[in-house]
Length: 115
Length: 111
Image (cartoon, rainbow over all chains, first blue to last red):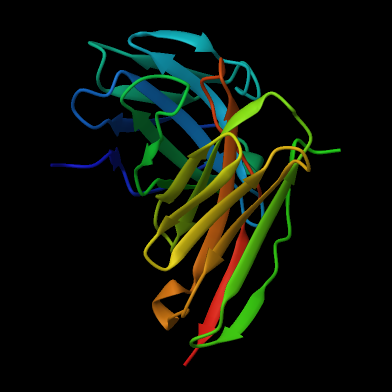
């Protein structure tokens, strides 16, 4: 079966522009997560969806960041007015259910470069 | 103090060596512990997961959790050059959705 799919795999954008990153989770997985990984840093949690609702948005770094999930499936992470410090790899993961022993399965990420 | 501490390495070992990777944590509510392997320009892939204290073995990999010491380990026996990657520990409490990750240890296995 297909794993977690993310697009685009690479994105170069100019400072101040908006970007949209897409995540297609594993079919049947109810929970979806966004993380950010910067060079030399660990995975920084951004947001967690259970179905279409987001019970935990605590990791979104500013109001320039937003995410939605529709139909309990595809999710989009939007960054408005991008800044150079937004440059990172954005990783999406899904799990069969949220929390507990359900492990996360990751996509290969979108590498965002803000020039 | 960060919630999860992991030595970033790099760690370099000869092929066939036993590798020990470790994490410490501060939150006693953590109950689920996972190890991920990440190759360059790829997403993390799940290697092992354990619940509460104890050992779990899967082929050349053994995961250990000592909740009393707030310390987890991953052992790799008969290491291979293909094991060269960054290893990330991750954990969560029973009611948490997100996983908390260590920064990862970069491992290089030399032929």
